[in-house]
Image (cartoon, rainbow, N blue to C red; front, side, top):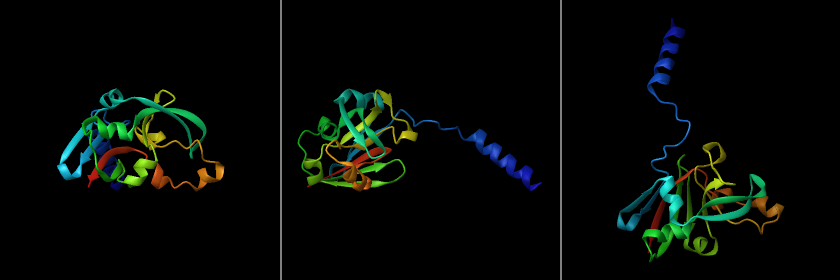
Length: 165
């Protein structure tokens, strides 16, 4: 009887809850300016129209150089807010992970929000739909192994919080 009851519960949950094979396209990135209580929401189509660019770089999980399409973080932030005095930003992933980028990080590294890999959308399985990367072409094999993934790369990125001076 317990087995039948459990199977009915599983069946009810499976029928009741729609299977989610991909993220909802209606919102892929939120940018929040904390001190001004200002929020911008972007769909993938909107994000692709702002300042599309390309970055060819190897990544720690893919040693060969690949062409990523996306937008530079600085271009996205300046799209609506042309004069920024950023203290730091947090990039938050769909799984709750947060990475903090200081002003020095943002000045010294050109972070890139990749949404395509070799012209194909980045799937959730491939750390998408948006992955924050940077140009790693100048790193040798040892430096690539030593790279702090938590600091330089954010997978499943879906929110940026801007903290200003």
